[in-house]
Length: 284
Image (cartoon, rainbow, N blue to C red; front, side, top):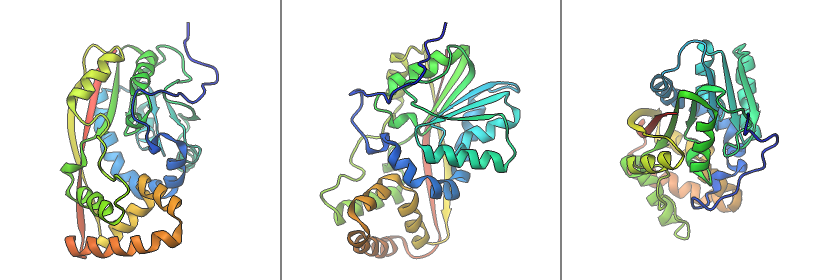
């Protein structure tokens, strides 16, 4: 018997502090540039997740908060099927475009709510969420839904970012933004699922007996500081939302000031940013 809702409404919960990244708008706005610029970077983390997920040829795979399908399309060549769900229409559209361009036919994109998955009980061999579930209003509900959809023994793999204090460029960026825009709390919030203890607490609350948490790091390169700052303005969802709220005229002096200050601190040349993540792995 299935517990899957026929038409899930957006889930509401006070379990975690509200985040502007828990709305489709943020991801609709960045979808095109995110797809064009960040997919290769996120594919490296997705490859790690697939390895830890222990997926075998012919597996039925679930990708929750799939975005443009960084993991879904990597998994497709050996999977029987990949159900790829996201609440952003534009991200789902980009996934459809990428699947069509690659002639991939076993990925099933679907618009939906990760806290109320529209799938039957015990219908997947492995389930993943790459840097998506971390923004859910109710992460435990999202984890419980992933667990519900797994066959006994199936693995769930969830990715989160370590605190950006461990990423000097991001730490510097947020500190500068707070100086330029002191009324905004950039980088002041707690990283969601940012510690091993949080993984253990929330996975246990969702019904998993245990979770193994693995540190994973990958680098990202930019040809210059100016290119890096320009990319942040196109692909970093909080910045894109801020620009939309402020408007082009008000944002222009912020853009210029930030660009100059970043070059003063980092130099104008090539930049490398090492990104550090956690991958939590649990079996049903």
